[in-house]
Image (cartoon, rainbow, N blue to C red; front, side, top):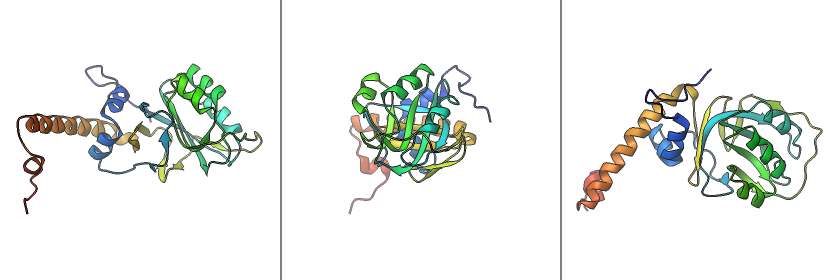
Length: 212
């Protein structure tokens, strides 16, 4: 399924979702499909939003990451199901450079990476369960662009991920327009609450909470 990536006013949808942030998008989109918070950005300043290109790996092997990278392009997020295995790092600085050259928006891996400081210095957003210096083999077959489970959430090829220091959330591609509109509305509501608080209002009154 193709995705319309800009609004009628020319705003890039993925850029806008990244601006909203994962927490706002999660709340606005029905409070569902939050990825396990153990999968964190190497650099807490990272923000990502983009389409998922998925790959399933055998633990301790990275052959199919190299193949999957050829299926990903500008603005995509490579989503790797490494079965939560953190005793080897199938992604490092060389793959980071290759991903940047292809214009990828980032990496999400339910596993580990290595060369973490080089990745941060490169400015490439990586969300990972762990960091490990141990190397991997390149002999085990995986699968590309299939549904994978990462951080307890089923992610299909073409689904959208939004991530930052607060976490990661998945959006079904068919829910993208609704998620964008709901996030816009939630942000406007929160801005109005901030204005009311600055004017002397209380969070109790604004949220309709009782005073015991």
